[in-house]
Length: 155
Picture 1 (cartoon, rainbow, N blue to C red):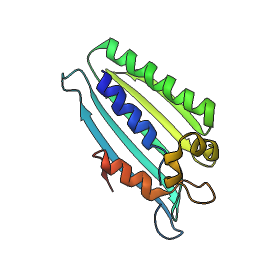
Picture 2: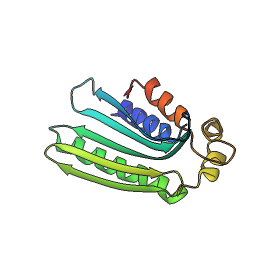
Picture 3: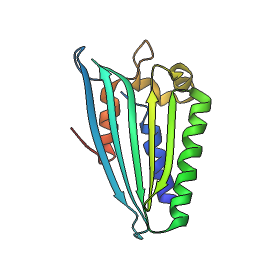
Picture 4: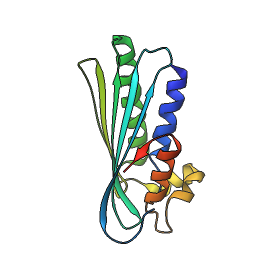
């Protein structure tokens, strides 16, 4: 369970990253799947990155935890709600919806980088300065490269 917490924490931190090409609007999708070594759950995260040019406007992240164990599902539901609500209360820009249905926790989180206080976030997390431009816009390339580094496949 602690490995999963570290993995989820890393995923959450990664949601804040960067860059692309011209000024065309785009959507890029990355998918990351992992299974608990003990077989208690499977986690799939789909990142849909929306933006224009090099700038990411928002990410819609859908996390699905599948398990036959009710305690595991309750744990993940609470963890995801608490984590994203804490980030939202500090920096804004998050819309969170977490539900349990049919042996799955389904978390749909939208991160609107134009509503988020990226300046404060970067001040609090200095590594993030590599993922925003001089106008505090989130860059797409960093987001995509970070998802790929975690093992996600991206289209």
